[in-house]
Length: 347
Image 1 (spheres, helix red, strand yellow):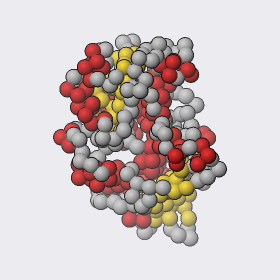
Image 2: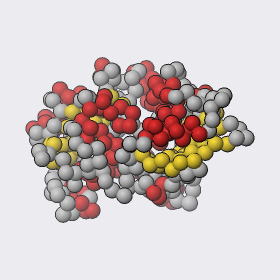
Image 3: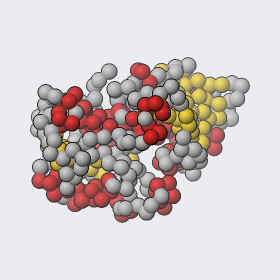
């Protein structure tokens, strides 16, 4: 098969490293460019010895120059960059004919004013927001297949949206009653020097943060609103836990009057029975991060509490996998007509 010439922009962070792990052995990928300002001139296996002897591991990092990336013949670029930085290079690469899969937050929101409210600065490319497709493969397959600019969802949003979207589409729950509690591994904060992320600060400890208005709320409420057909406002409480990777989320909401609990399981089965990377645990199934780390799976279980009339949704994923790099590769496979599971069949 003809392999797709591919670039990773910002390949030296945790998400970039996950993309490398997946793409270096992807049967449909020829990795032709990897960028890093800090590591330019060094080979992949020099920076990440774990990739020694992997195909393409001698490829050298280059600076994130759009002309240099385009000169490699790259047809698509994954952007593993911070928000506010990705938009400019995304525009430059689109102008040079590349497709772009952006893993930052720069193109996830449809409203530039909401972006400014949550991210604290004006959107750097508001004219592209209408074109970008929110890259949740299980919800937007046809749109992703036709897109040239993909906004890969955030890790917390994926874990919250996947269980809730089918229930909102079928009007089974009251959206005003949604409360989501999530716990994430430390890699979710990125590969950076930060006192609060040091081992001795995180180990043997757990804490909430980003309350009451975590940045990911913006895209969570946007996508829930699209599914419900009305504005949705929820409570979201993220927590940091002392593991390297993994997210577990417990979401509760009130069932609509007259809705039997069994309708929850039926809606999830209807939505995901054929989904390659969704594993439904059924009623009473409690999702566990140890079963999803280093994979692209999201596990979803549910239960009903008759005392409160609330449904309890439990999900787990790898924040670097289904919450970031793996999901982006899912989108890549859809765009280029490859098997949905190419490069992602790891357990």
